[in-house]
Amino acid sequence: MHSTDAMHSTDARNSTDVRTGTDVRTATITAGPVAASPRLDFAKSARNAFRALIGFDAAAREGIDPALVELIQIRASHINHCAYCLHMHTNDARKAGENEDRLHMIPVWREARHFFTAREQAALALTEAVTLVADGGVPDDIYAEAATHFDDTELAHVLALIFTINTWNRIALSTTKQAGTDTR
Image 1 (cartoon, rainbow, N blue to C red):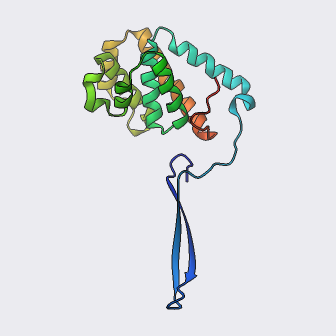
Image 2: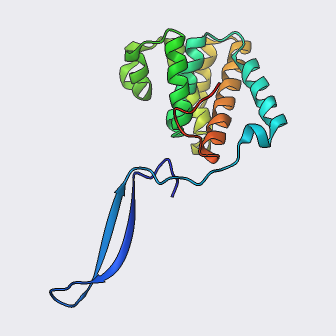
């Protein structure tokens, strides 16, 4: 059971019904995520890999509007169920001038297209396809649509940004980083 996905844990036990004397299976349900055991600090334990990823992330952002950077990072973090990154990037998006209405619509952007420009929609669709690449690759139509909104350099940077946020999500999830504990 993954600690961030667990909404309830069940502790099942056999007991005897005192009225009838029969064995009864009872369960106790505990609400909330199961506390994870402490895991390594990736930044300290793999310093060179961590620094390389920071450098890759910084290079990926070059030339991309900071608000779009955050939309991409938020959407990938939603898909990956990374509460740590989602918390961090929604806060960063607000600092970049993003408004609450749009932040709330990111997970359902297809149903709320009027909140997003065609360029942002293309980036969000590409983010979803790359993040879910194991589900069928990156469809040609999604890639082609993104290519109509970004030149080759911009598109390469958008892709690099999608790669980095997916890596950051996996680091945060694997090491059980807790939402709200970002110390940047």
